[in-house]
Amino acid sequence: MTANGQMAGGLSDANATEYTGSAWKSIPEINGQNNGGNYLVPIKVLKAQVQVVAGTNTILEVLVGESTCAKGGPIQAKQITAANCPLKANGQRAIYKVTIWEKVWENFTQITAEKVRDVKPSEQF
Image (cartoon, rainbow, N blue to C red; front, side, top):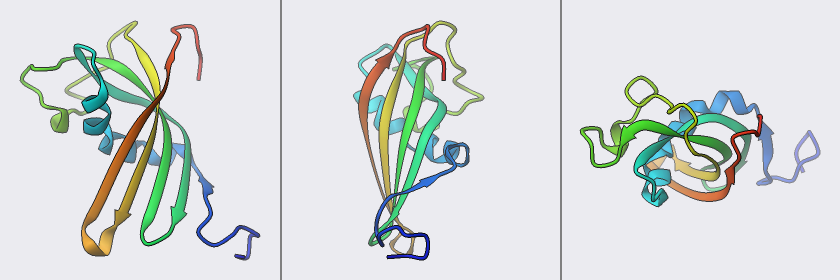
């Protein structure tokens, strides 16, 4: 047990707003699963949890939306930024669970993304 009563190695809630940069790291993985014609970009990190076990697992719940950048266009998935691929008005949206496992001392990062569900246009977050 730790001082705050959590089990060592357990998940700890984190401030979701601090993980926007981490959400952008997951864009190539998310778009590898996206069958749509345009790239998806993060809109907001809804939930963040951190686990320290042989590195750091960061687990995010990310709201993503369709951007104005077409797949197969001049911009590749690894080059997407908020500045060069803005959010498409009334585009499709979805929630993804993203896990980022990092061992910085080994220069190791593994990112997995899993679609949780589509989001209706009327839903507010």
